[in-house]
Length: 208
Length: 385
Image (tube, rainbow over all chains, first blue to last red; front, side):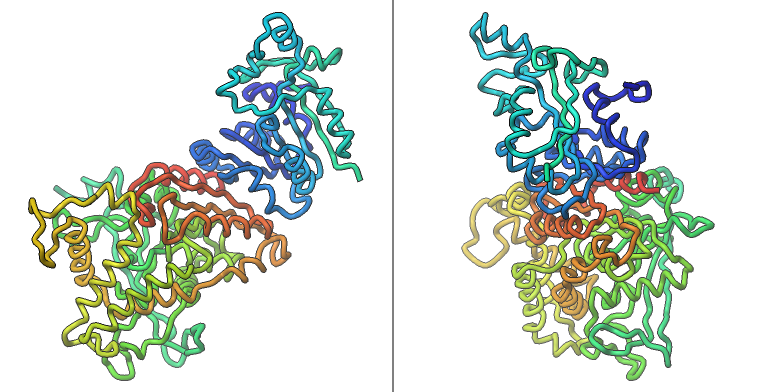
């Protein structure tokens, strides 16, 4: 995978960016400071829209010249006409969503493809912590304690594959990666992904 | 000190009020109410330099009691005179950067700040129009601005920007002349008035019409309905503030006294403040203009035309780039109304950005210097060149 021109954004965003077709329409949910959107506009000529709950971050994005709506992503996605976007991106947010099945249904309505990424809870370090130390696992990807975590769900690659099958999504692509949060570097994991990957990235489509 | 040099780093400097008159007899401006009206004079000001291709023009639409004096100073301003009403936003290096853009601000038709309104002389009688002035709408205000732009040879606007009733004009521009608008920034505004907003406007109007001096609008040259207009302003002013802002500014503090007077003097600071605002307003605004402009705002409703516009309706291919801004403490046009606008724009396939700004100063927040709004607008405009 060629990533030479994407050194400045987070590694998982580089991977997501690399899968997006040029000139397409993209909606990035929880777009943060707009790094991925800015990268996509510059490098792929993509028509971008972002949704961000945090007012300061949303304002920062708009001041960068990006089209961004400040609001709650579960509510905001409801108003778009069907197939408004070629890609809808939900990066590192699924584990914080109250009704993930409902949200993914909405996303697959407004986007032809949905790109979902989340921290993999079956990474071997997490398994070992629970097994050996007996405490709720913490690592670089999931740094919170049980009482202050915004993450209300734990997801593994295996679980997501099963969920997609059960609900009727086709997994167009699965990319398992090993990287740290906020890091620009990492690598794609090809073997024993559910054990060795820190993040899973999935491109799914509604199976018709 | 010389104003031109003392303000040169942040101000557009000296500006001049100009006038454009059109719809001379036998031509007329057809108004939405059906009347054929003319002649029409529009007072306007410009700052910055119009590019050779005339592609850098930004129209700023003022709010209800505003005027064309958007930024800078007049040559004959007295010492310590305040600059134009949006001087914090419009100027060299500011949110609307006059080093890059040519800014036009026109006084709305129906007002009393230089454009034709109920206080202007009726050419048929040589007396002020009074209530013979036709009912004008936000759409008529926009048509008059369009006539002005035509006269300046401007065929496309880089942006239309405005707050409150100015925001209504922005939305009207987008549905009426979409092919002329590249970016639109409606701030603290709504697609149509709620019952609450109409109610406050009606109280303001009734207070003027109940003043015996109002005399069915025929008071020019005699005693003016000052008391009615002052009370109307007091009501209006409360709707521009917020519970938080009034608590912070006044609380229950007393004005120049330790104890209650047990009478109807202004005991509380808030009473004294509102009386002061009322009196100040009487000196600069015409009561009939308030009647006409508030009614225009109440009649304004672009919900249907917004729903029918935009790329999703195939009415036109080019998208307008929208930036919608609302304020947390605005109870006149609360955020839910801005969100309705955002929803409509999403449904119709428009390119829309939205941000709610945290501010406790209510509806008027957009007029108060705030770096956040300047950055938002500046970045948005520059990202769309």
